[in-house]
Length: 144
Image (cartoon, rainbow, N blue to C red; front, top):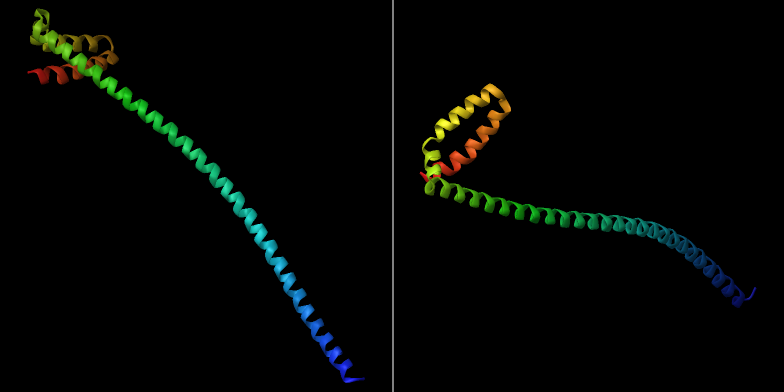
């Protein structure tokens, strides 16, 4: 065998070995790409779920904000109503004859109503106690 043939033969062997290594590397790359693809799919679905959850949370926050605004508005209206009622009641007690009488003799009326409530119905008593607390304590006590 000539030296040129020997050199050709050894070059072919080296090429064959290099091709095998290249083939192995390609298989590893292919496996890694498959894993990467699976991971990307999982990541994508997780992102979609997160996005949906964020949208739901945003909607819930908007609803809560609206409800809170309505509640604040209702509270303001209620407090305005109470102020008007209290001023009207003060005017009634201070400026009218009947009001002055009512103011002086309120404890007698309250006592009579309590006894009446005890004779008739217990729930009436609680209702009157609420009424007494609301009007007498809040309005008369402040005006005196």
